[in-house]
Image 1 (cartoon, rainbow, N blue to C red):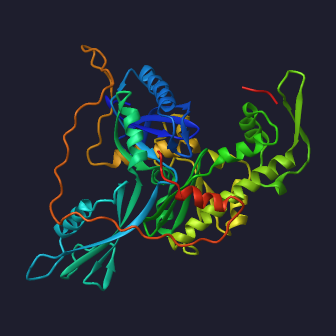
Image 2: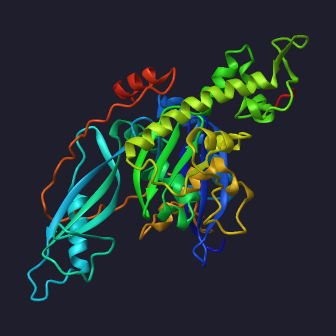
Image 3: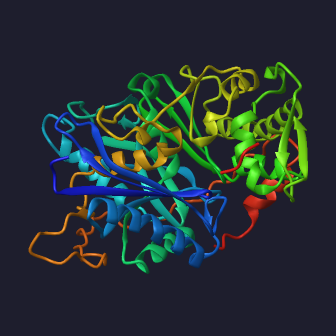
Length: 453
């Protein structure tokens, strides 16, 4: 890549931390010059629970990138996930300026967006994205693009994607202690969708599911807009724990699952026994492949039940003609697409994050586990003036220390005056499995923040 300055993004997952560096090429495709992952410790179900452990994991990943590329990371784009990520709709309007022809102009749309930028979240929440859903002219005509229409009043509904300010502050302070500034934090659910969705899927309507270690991220798309976002605090790590509960040593669980595991017991063609090393060299443990698949399927059906419930809450059940787009590390599990089809009755596409990636980029850019970090890069690159967050040191100057550069703050948007988002009560959901009651209690808690077989 010829450019001296690149964009960096970091996905701080429950199982690993991944950093990607790259930028857009001449054709507008994402060219990734480096991508690295390190085991993550100190994050549980998407939330930082031990800052010291997280700092050490991130520090190692940052050093890997800096040493390979000869760059110092100063600013980086980040994402967040977990039970604290949700969304809410907010309505706003502006009166069109008094003109003889009454034509709506771009300046009216801009004023509407500026007003939305002034809307503040209630205490304890942060607005990560403001996504326009529709425009209404004079309370009658719903349009996608109001410019050129005639009317006196222009209204809009925006989808505000929210996260816990406590959780996001923890993330930012953890990075700042390492001399790296979080330039902006996005919802991981939207980042993953950015990396895998096809244009026609955005229009037809789809549910994008990113199945990770500690969380499952969901976004619902319809008519070219993100309509719903939710973080579900369960993932493939729960499957690992279920397997571990069968007496399998923790160090063998992941390899056993990925090598012999199936998402459905009915897909297992033989009931052969799998021998695994035990606690001592002479000790052997055995589990049948069918029993292994049964354990995996049970937990996956629980997670799918939560996803279905959230899609129901979005109001788009039966309206997603594009079905489900599944990505994330969990999508590599054999037979998971067939299980999703049977459980939901929807079409399923297993997606790689290669839709917007240049052909010459690293092979790792086509790993579904990297969908979030690649999506974060894409969202950062789409900003009008992305930060130069990774810079190759000049030959006549010593490398930078990695501390953040100072950035001027944007001027505050003009009036109207600030408003708070009203919290809308969630609809009660139907019972969806053995851990459903625990899940609801979990959501109501305060936010604290190589082996051979």
